[in-house]
Amino acid sequence: MRPFAYARADSAESAVRALSEAGPGVKVLAGGTTLYDLMKLDIEAPTSVVDVHRVPELSYIDTSGDELVFGAGARMADMAEDPVVRNEYPMLSESLWRAASEQLRIMATAGGNLLQRTRCAYFRGGEPYACNKRNPGSGCAAIGGADRGNALFGISDSCAAVYPGDWPIALIALDTEVDILGPDGERTIPLAELHREPGDRPEVETTLRPDELILRIRVRKTPAGRGSAYVKVRDRESYAFALASAAVAVAVEPTGVVTDARIGIGGVATRPWRVPAAEQALIGQPLTPESMRHAGEVAYQGARPGTHNVFKVELGIRVVADALRIAGERAAR
Amino acid sequence: MKQRTGTVFETSVQVRARVNGKDVELTVDPRESLVDVLRERLGLTGTKKGCDHGQCGACTVHLDGRRVVSCLTPAVQAEGTEITTIEGVAGPDGELHPLQQAFIDHDAMQCGYCTSGQIMAGLAAIAEGHADTDDRAREYLSGNLCRCGAYCGILAAVRQVAEGDA
Image 1: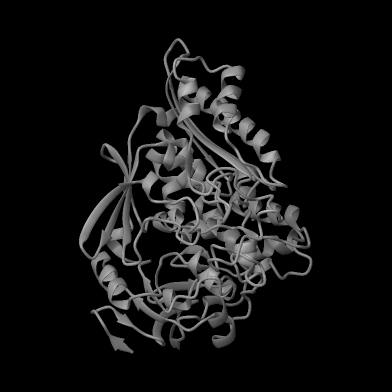
Image 2 (image 1 turned 180 degrees about the vertical axis):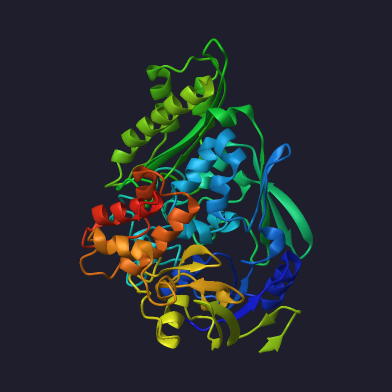
């Protein structure tokens, strides 16, 4: 690991000040489960690090108002177990406890989870593999290579690396905003505007500036939360990244007709991926095996598989349908 | 060390922590991981270093009462915390903790390399209330790999203590 200078911030404001004064090469350290891991692999090599892990004002969860509010430092394990999250937004809770291991969930934070970096083997593998994300301009060894884990959506000729998180797949399906602190004060963006598709700059993954800090994530409450589910299919039953996942929430009339539908898909896209066309396909329809399957097919329209990930199309369609079945049962309770 | 903001950037950092009930004060390089500091500098080699990337759970310890992987915990983040390692689990006269005894009784190991991590994770899972059914215990212990495949014994030991039958 390369040497770096370390500073422990005691407030969000002092962290941002330290970030801007440290200049290029500075990184925010929270739980460390991504950054410190990648520093050990020499994939990340910050010259200085600002530690925000124990900034008290970032570490809270407030589900009492019109919104679910998650401080950027809230731990994944604690968010998963919050009673309101667990009872009224099962897909949020499931997306959290089905991610990583409990040890990692106790360490990892809300803000860090949004910014988790890809698990693409060529990115993590380092030299001699080409990777435009790690080494801009070097090419992409995954395209035409071992691309079983790679994305079907939001890809470019430069990069097809999957965004690996689970919770943001559920968040993107809801009305989620992110509050950000920078040197000029606070700004708010929809979650949909946080992550970038790779395009020809895969090394730039978000719209955050290097001297900005995520303060909190806010989710507008919706009755559809109760009728929600996060289904995640992976190579082993626990403690693995998604091959295909789906976060769905539905509101259903007593007649069985869907009045609201939210669908996000994971393990298959370069950023948290919402599929409005699949949501629209369900509105006004009853949830039947055919309509649920159809919504999955609409969600996967436009998928661009490579060589070894073609199976993810059919798998993903079935995962969407399965999540809708579970969500529909919960909505009807 | 230079003061740029009020937030100090340092390349060697003073860390004070309580490890298994003893106060410890060390100067660490911010690159050092907690597992390396525990093993190499404090001589607490019961904590094992497996993958060094948070994937196997062998290095699990308790930090302020909660389980973490010490390989992905920079030692600087231990400042002001209370740490318990496998060496701090037995009673004052060396009598085994009921979970340690249950691991022996259920043959919950072969090579033993993952065992201290399994026990630290198991103790935490029990305290969290995540070992109340076989399925939940499996899920909440999935961060600890056993290459020998002693999972049946591990599960039996953790479940026994969770049910208070030890």
